[in-house]
Amino acid sequence: MIVEVADFKIEPAKHQEFGQALKHAAETVLSRATGYRGHSILSCVETQGRYVLTVQWETVGDHTIGFRQSPAFANWRAIIGPFFAQPPHVEHFAIVDSKSF
Image (cartoon, rainbow, N blue to C red; front, side):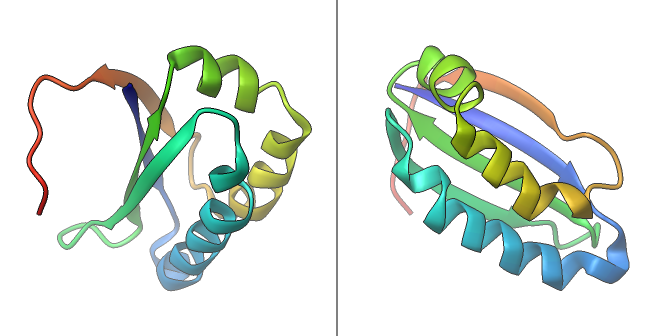
């Protein structure tokens, strides 16, 4: 399993609206993707307009090929893309250690 970390910068005035849109997109589009295992949405306390999305995938390819090259990705971007102040920064990580909250 790998973890995608996406860092979003949003116009501060649209902070709440983006949070709702991101949750909706994750529940209706992302969660149906092949290889999807779960996600979390974090809203920055210090910087209004910053969100971090983590997504657990079976493989990097499930995200970069299976999801990003599918019609579902266009739906995903249609929901959340209009809020971007700049393109999100996305990287993939291997889990070294983990403990549930």
